[in-house]
Length: 145
Image 1 (cartoon, rainbow, N blue to C red):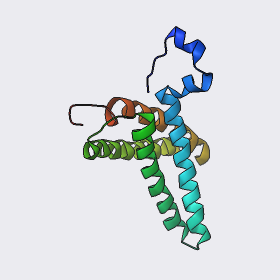
Image 2 (image 1 turned 90 degrees about the vertical axis):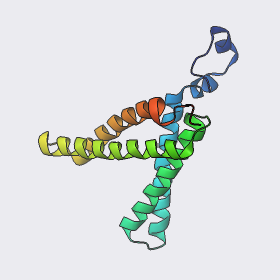
Image 3 (image 1 turned 90 degrees about the horizontal axis):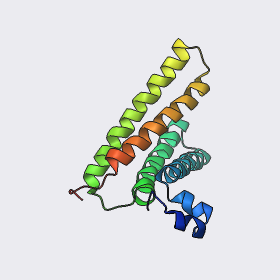
């Protein structure tokens, strides 16, 4: 999916189609879909009577898988060497977790903000970090594909 659109194409391509050509829009949509998977899977297992920590873990696992596949197939489509791409994804996922913990700790313990406000800030920081590394490193197309 191309990032740029010529002036002549703008008149012929509907607004939503042009919007979906931008990887940042697709990145956000995959993120929203992954969050929905997380909540839906967690809710499903809670409904079955599974302990909330296990239910949340299963939801998170499902959302990480959905997120990786969504970005690989929709946000940054291409041919990848899957083991290396997955390894890079997991490195950034771990970094995003560290960033989340750091932002939450800083917000709650040093700035005395409510934990949910700190979490919202962390989500924004992690989204920018994740998009940048996804575009430049995780889903890069290289000679290893």
